[in-house]
Length: 174
Image (cartoon, rainbow, N blue to C red; front, side, top):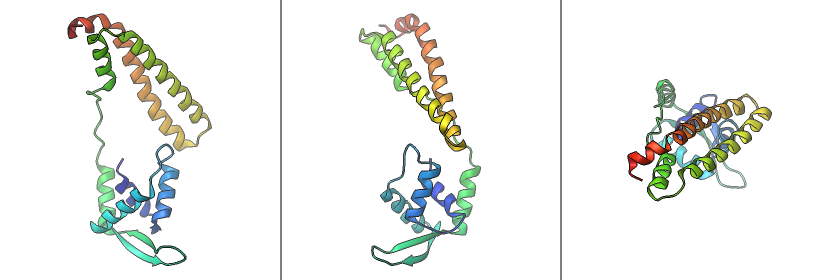
């Protein structure tokens, strides 16, 4: 996810302080991985330097000065271009799991045990996500569905690989 573009998109509805941007980001997108304040302010500094945001006001109070940021026309154009650009599908051709299976075969360890352990872990996470989906709002349900579909694909791969272990062992020279 492009944090800069996400913050720019949030600014399209009106100027905000860094604190407010962080809070809104975390509410909408950061359930599992909230932003650090330093990340927000370093990103805003870069966006300011690149002319995509401007300082809309500075408030001073009991603490440090608080800058309120507003998106510029260049920022709006940049967000529009980013939203229009399709995301590159990730084919996962370099899978750590595949590497582990091959190394288990090459080193005389049980690739079946590795696949069974991984299957158990996938199913555990799927139960957690399914519970979260039941109690979550629509945004949470959609993000859980996305993760669940990927985990289901992984489970299919685990089953297919388990069925082909003998052939794979022969091909990799185990």
